[in-house]
Image (cartoon, rainbow, N blue to C red; front, side):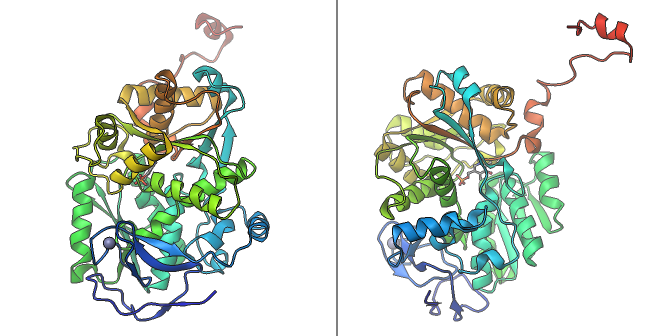
Length: 438
Ligand SMILES: *Cc1c(COP(=O)(O)O)cnc(C)c1O
Ligand SMILES: [Zn+2]
């Protein structure tokens, strides 16, 4: 593939070596989602014409459908099987990285029975199986290739917890310094999981939106020079990692689109890019073109997109988050308006559940399918249940519900609801007295 030349830019973001040649595979340029203005690949995220978000524009013209399908199927059992569709160099699979993806698509017949879904039609895409136990490994894996291409030496991010861990792990393996920023009051599991990889972990006195604002300030300051913020100045590259969820779901269904997907919303990036991934598969001829519906899921305590959806608004009014679903607690979601577009265009919806319903849903998934989800998974399962009850989700159609994180990171959410059935002395009498005998 032809290498792309990055021209020096007048953008405020400084890359140590922004006039170098970069090879990010099929990625051809950055293009503005709002006005279509194109600029060469670089560590940029906002359009110089209209401040709209920049996205990766690809050149897929050389691909022939059957060849591409065979190439993917012969690839490794991780996200790099889709390297021809991602902004990464062709030899990415040989570089040191944590190789996420190819997580299980679980046919959830027991859960289906509980929810009144036709047997065989309900699936859980279980992304807790990634190296740092959340879907964030997918997006960081893309950002780190961009960081290499732009010669950044420090990896950073603003995080609600999972991203901090994913950046820490990927940086450790790839040999970058990492320094990440989180709200200081996150769950203990998230803090430990982010700190153990040895990078710097900074708690900010404030919520995620304060952390994000601080990071934007740091990017424009000499104090942050040479830093690649995976979800800020590397965001166009980072975001593409979520497409791999769409690719995997379709390939695991035998190269078919599901009819309905239930996807959690924090900033809305994941949902937006899953839609982009599905559209690409259709255009490339890898799946048959048919309608699908995308449903967004939020926690009531942080539901700016759901509130806007229900009110019929196009703009998303920011909220101050207050929910146990901290990984989704972004009160001012950058991609909120695009989520509204996609839910409406595909005939889906955006719905929310309260914290009690989140806990109930975590337990329901665990007790039916043996999958222990973090709070974000409680949100999607809870919302799926609610959407079936209110008739918006068709229980006879193929439905994929995402679980994007591991319950071990949010033990507190269910700790008060679970525990020992009994404590007994080590003898049979005591066992019988406790009423446990068959
Ligand atoms: C980050 C995250 C998401 C989705 O985030 P977006 O900002 O909407 O892309 C979903 N689930 C979990 C567990 C996460 O950590
Ligand atoms: Zn623009």
